[in-house]
Length: 198
Image 1: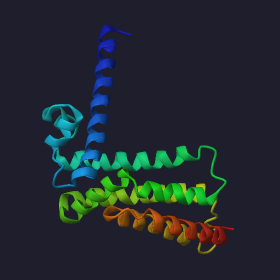
Image 2: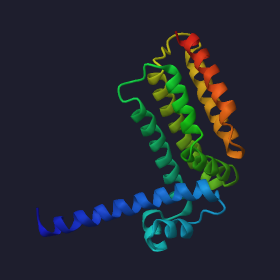
Image 3: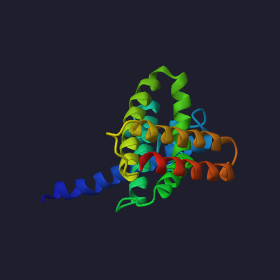
């Protein structure tokens, strides 16, 4: 390895670390302050980098927050896989884990971006495309974890209905802590899925 190569590796590592800090800060800002309160300057300050460094990685605000939502989506998928590295034997545990992801801070950050995208034409196409990809990935993971056979009539729709329900519980959780009701809904959906997927 040449001297130039050795010098480049630490710089690349620093660049990756800066990018990671910016993404984490963007997610936290979206979750805490929403779209209006999450500027590139606020994110850069939270990440401990200059605005110029932030714009080097993400030239526009839309670039930054679209990348942040992609990061959120990957984190949600990874978190779900890591909960059940050997696969899940208990469907109720899967239902609970999925609902927990949809009621957590990662989903809250994504919701703020969805709301912003509904009013920002430039952001809408990016977020719509990203969420379609995330939705397909989440559906595939849920099918695997639930040991669902999509070749059977109605199974695909049943799993999609479950994911839509989990997303709805995430929305309800934005305004109030809905833990008690959510537990009852999770128990009911677990029973329904058990019967439908048997």
